[in-house]
Image (cartoon, rainbow, N blue to C red; front, side, top):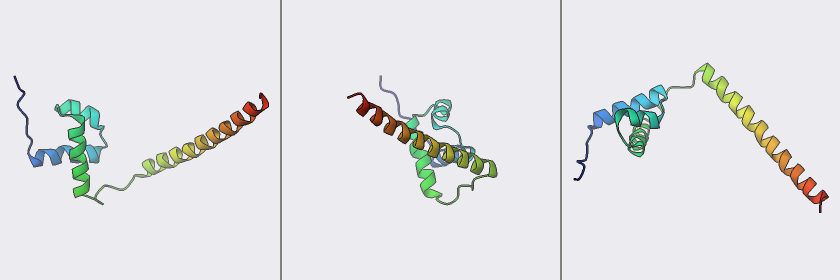
Length: 96
């Protein structure tokens, strides 16, 4: 028995995509909630974003602060990785 393909109205697709974008919801969990494939929902969200470029709300103060913290942490981790790579190369040459 073949499964019958479900269809959704453009209004429904836009409503779900808007909810995901505005509420910063996770696509996988939302897809499970509404019973849609993750990639299908991702396509809806991408189409919504393309149709509404520039309409996303600006970051809040707390979001900006969190972004700065993550960028700082990212820089520190890159420096640590670079240092450890150089140290490993140094010690590897010592034991040859």
